[in-house]
Amino acid sequence: MNVRNTIERLLEVARNGLPQMLSDGGFAQTLRGIQSRSGLVLQLEGTNLRYSAIVALGAAYLDEARQRDILGGSTAVEFVEKLLAWAEASSDLGALALTAWAAAEIAERDAESIFRRLEAAYMEDVSLSTVECAWTLTAALAARFIGDTRALQSMAAERLRTAQRPSGLFPHIVSPQGGAQLRGHVGSFADQVYPIQALSRLAAASGDRSALEAAEACASVICRHQGISGQWWWHYDIRTGDVVEGYPVYSVHQHAMAPMVLFELLEAGGMDYRSQIVRGLRWFEGRPEVNLDLISEEHGVIWRKVGRREPGKAVRSISAITTALSPGAHIPGLDRIFPPREVDYECRPYELGWILYAWLSGGVVKDLSSFNRA
Image (cartoon, rainbow, N blue to C red; front, side, top):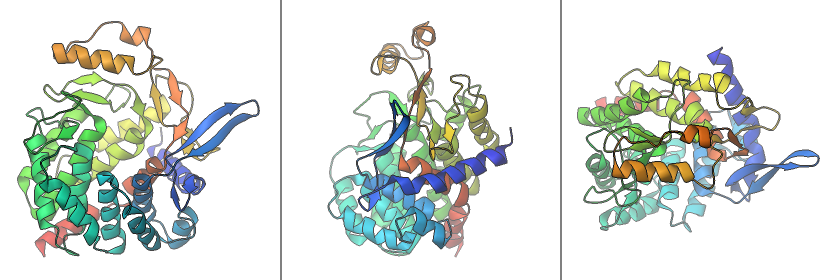
């Protein structure tokens, strides 16, 4: 496999596929492939502020002509203004954090009103999702020389540090006291990668070695459990560090999210996991689950995931219950009864946005480090 060619394919699909995902001035929730008598028909559904902010973050690393092509005629800086206006009516903390991050990194804008709202949420005695907490820390770090985000940075960092388990993994929910309240002992791949990113950036920005060690502890677990064909597995037991359920395997984990955060960990001075990044990319060529090429230049998409043939989320539910009662236990025969052979014919804008960011934004963490030295 020529990894460079795979990366170029991914970038080309992202550049060509994102314009078709524009919807109502932002980006859609998803682009779904629907089988019809005449073939596959692509259908846009909904709009999503989170995904729009992620697309802006990625598109900002393209030249101006490409930015305008993707962002409906706007540059990334101009598109940020639309995001900020959209965010005024949003109560989604994750969307607010991503918008503030994009405003700071792309336009050097202090999204002061957003940061005030985020800070108010962290001062309340409520639980928050780990992903939202990580994005908040990343946003606060991006804006720390534009506005005063020190208190928010401290609160978000403390939430993440307190939530991390001795295994190195993070729960799905973080609370002020550090307890996971929902989904108990199970943390997803997303619950791990965004804290790795945020803590790597914190280490680079502040010189805090313990933040880097926390990021490395988490990264070592997911890399240790990477599948034989390069799969990044989905659900983990945060108590033991074991895999609860591997499927679905999401394309975005393989081509963007894992590379993005592991590159940033390396930039911050952490371990070198580039061989695991390459293995993850090779899954697109040697995946044992399906024969279909998930990278579709014809449709300008990368199909979302490969999952099991199962009713609902049966195996995930069974595995979560089994491991809750007996850590490390697995019911034999589930792979045979519910084989991972189903392709999800869907592509979401953030997946392509993260491709651009993962492969084009190199140096962001080093910039944080240089500010720290200054």
